[in-house]
Amino acid sequence: MKIAILSDIHGNYAALSEVLRSIDRQGISNLFVLGDQLGYYFQAEEVYKELSRYVNCMIQGNHERLFLEFLKADEVRRKELTEKYGSCFSFYEKTFTPDLINFIRKLPKSMSVERDGLRFSLCHGSPVDEDQYVYPDAEAEIFQQFDMPGADFVFFGHTHYPMMLCGKHSVLINPGSVGQARTVGGVANWGILDTKNGVYTPQCTPYNIQTVIEDLAKKKNTKSYLQEVLKRNNAWHEV
Image 1: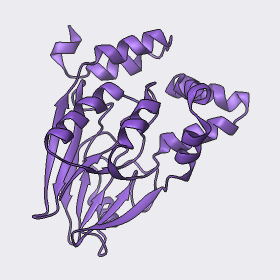
Image 2: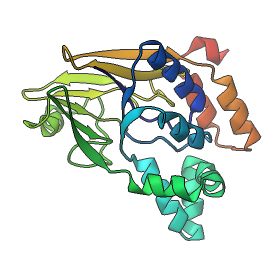
Image 3: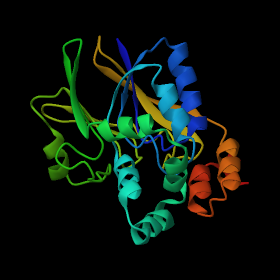
């Protein structure tokens, strides 16, 4: 069995669409989705709808929790969240169905899964803290907390930086971000795990950022970072 590992889509449907085309071409029907399906960009409803076509194990990220907080927050906190993350949460509040909001609310923060005799731990930040940022240059002691005797693979996201490290017990993997890569803008980072041989293969899928930028303008989102990060380190987009 081949399993596609996706994280940090962030409502970027243009990026997800290209990734799913690649997944479909390879005949993959099983997904691990590691959180932050929404946040920043506006096509999160389409993201959840497309992902529902697959057999997937999906967890919450910090942006799912921030959105749920936004729904209950007072005006001061709503303003803080909007200033930091843009106007996406307000848009979701107006457009998401009650069923979708309830689905998001029920997503687990982490998950343990077994496939073909391999044991997987799925989390967003880390197995010990769902909001922990663990970067590739973190101290060795940090990664030792991930190295779990009960898991052959630990998959996590949150930082948007791809990485892989072999521990004593577990292989620790961050597939990077589908929707807002920190390495090269306009390229979706994800991965494929083959349960037959235990091999993980990183994937880099280019997509057209222009539709995302046009959608930001249409929604009158003035947070310039959301456009700039889509062009990062990519000369084709920086001209």
